[in-house]
Image 1 (cartoon, helix red, strand yellow):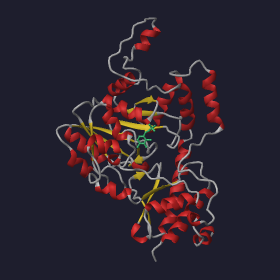
Image 2: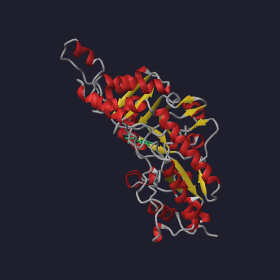
Image 3: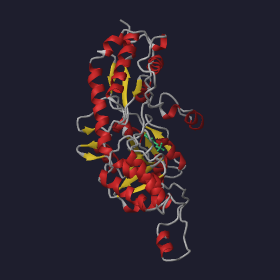
Amino acid sequence: MRSNLQACDQLALHGGRPVREKMLPYGKQLVEEDDIKAVSDALRSDWLTTGPRVAAFEESVAAYVGAARGVAVNSGTAALHAAMFAIGVGSGDEVIVPPMTFAATANCVLFQGATPVFADVTPGELCLDPKHVMERITPRTKAVVAVDYAGQPCNYDVLRQICREHGLFLVADACHALGAKLSGACVGTMADLTVFSFHPVKHIATGEGGMVVTNDDALAQRMISFRSHGVEADFRQRQEQGSWIYEMHHLGFNYRLTDMQCALGLSQLSKLDRFLSRRRAIAARYSQAFTAMPGVRPLDVRPDVEHAWHLYVVRFDLARFSVGRADIFAALRAEGIGVNVHYIPVHYHPYYRERLGMGPGLCPVAEGAYEEIVTLPIFPGMTDEDIEDVVCAVAKVMHAFCKV
Ligand SMILES: *Cc1c(COP(=O)(O)O)cnc(C)c1O
């Protein structure tokens, strides 16, 4: 009822009263007292960095998604890098990635001296399109990185089939999709390696943090070495036996996640189901509200999918509006709604244009979607009132910019 009243009000952008005084962010962690206690317990323990909570967190995340092994690192980006190292991506190799993602998905290929090759996404879901993956395979292709855009699993049955036929590794960048399911199974076992992020806007937070899960012990061992300077994993064993000898076998990094952070991660993981169901409830309310608003189109969700709703993305049918996406974005921000755009296609970034000669034209579906998408706030701490503020602001802005 509020939304009906306010829909005709003057836009905040034009001097009217905003729907909200305080900006609602698009994503935010939910840290509670027991999370704080878990971290302070870690601080009082003997371990700050690699201790028992790291292994416990790895085992718990792996168990949650149904994978055999988890390797924790200090960001999702480091997890992607470790994944590329583990499967042996190197100079001369090509790795197929989607453009509708955060730059780290493609950057990790460059970290290893290889070439990211962009393949377009599906128009309805903005997930990597198997058809375009096929078109990009060359004798140099080593792997495919699929991104579960917004929290919807990619079509892994088809992607796995393609990778098997061409002898390619399949990596899932599931930074949006912790807890998402495809045909009843969790994202985490659909690819050779699956990458998660624990950045505060993601499903569970460790501050910075990431993990790769896999069923392959050899790949897990390579990543354990890689996250700690390329020193072989039996180093700790030797140390425990009182030996000073350790051997560096690979050019690794210090990508270790700390016990303090894993304490937070463990505590957060125990709430993941609750967080996911809140995200799903918010998405359901949005989707219901937007069916009554022509011109605002949520992305498609495939029927075999349980979405993890990291992002709630709508496309504005610009033919119906007197302004472009930039004005719609600015108007929503002025109403106190912290909208965002996920993502600028990676190949649009100056680095990719100037150093790699890429640019518009490479992936028309992603490029077209980019002109129309806006990400609305969705996070477990949102109140029902916050949700209605978003619906109200969208209705208000649509009404003001509607052509007829
Ligand atoms: C967040 C994110 C990353 C990077 O994770 P960080 O933990 O921020 O390094 C990579 N890929 C995608 C799709 C992401 O959303």
